[in-house]
Amino acid sequence: MNVYEDIRKGERGAWLSIAAYVTLSAFKLISGYIFASSALLADGFNNLTDIVASLAVLIGLRISQKPPDSDHAYGHFRAETVAALIASFIMAMVGIQVIIGAIRSLFAGNETKPDLWSAGIAIICAVVMGGVYLYNRGLAQQINNQALMAAAKDNFSDALVSVGAAVGIIGAQFGMPWLDIVAALAVGVLICKTAWDIFRDSTYRLTDGFDEEQLGDLRGTISRIPGVERIKDLKARVHGNHVLVDVVIEVDPHLTVLEGHKICDTVEERMSRTKNVMHVHVHVEPGEEEAEQVE
Image 1 (tube, helix red, strand yellow):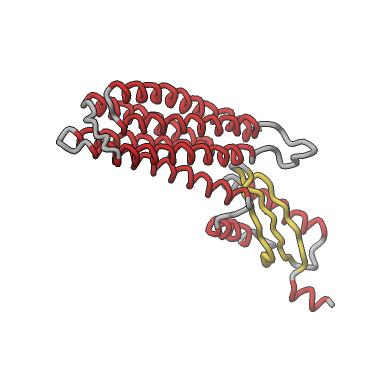
Image 2: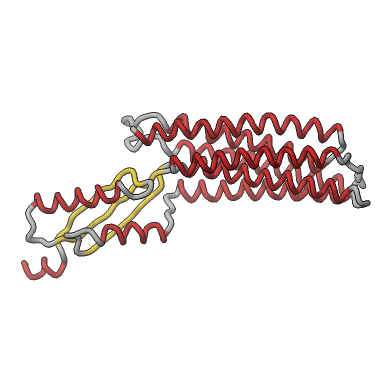
């Protein structure tokens, strides 16, 4: 099944992110201690949280490949959403710790001037993470995987964090050593914001929230199908990276069962060609005006 093949392709992006974060976090943390850079240390801790997030994506992709069973008739695609939710809590805790550490250093007067070499390291790491972002974004677009696209956006934010760290370190060279600590504070805030965005998106999906604009697009597609007189009800929910649709349509009550069934088949076929729609349940009812005349 192509859905599962695409998920397996998405694992490559998750593994690449994990390898990059492990390497860069170790590099930044060691360099941060050597060159006395709070911003570089905070950036390194940020990458540690990203390892957790990438592992969550990888685990979710692995579990979501399990086929449907008696307990999960629609499959296990929501596993990655649950894993992302757990990762958001871990990221938030680390982000808060980074903020607390930066504030303590600021009020304690810990304004050690970081070595300029740490700025170069931050810039190199930003370039590397930018390359990871471009790869994951391309792969996510190719396989239409929202989880991997979210990971790619996280890669991009990490590249920006490294740039910010470099700015703080360079600023500290011009008689503003406190700017390095402020940059560390900004990194902590960014970690918390990323955690909040992941938490908000995950809870929205798990509570069956669905974008109204996308629902309108689905409604427009169904209403243009020949034989569909009116859409009486339309619901949709996200299942992992896929969409499940329930629709009630009204048709001419004089149609035969076979003709009504063909219209249902057309609705299902059109929806299956729509982005990320995995399953469609169609219920047919007679048109109200026609039904009243028949009575």
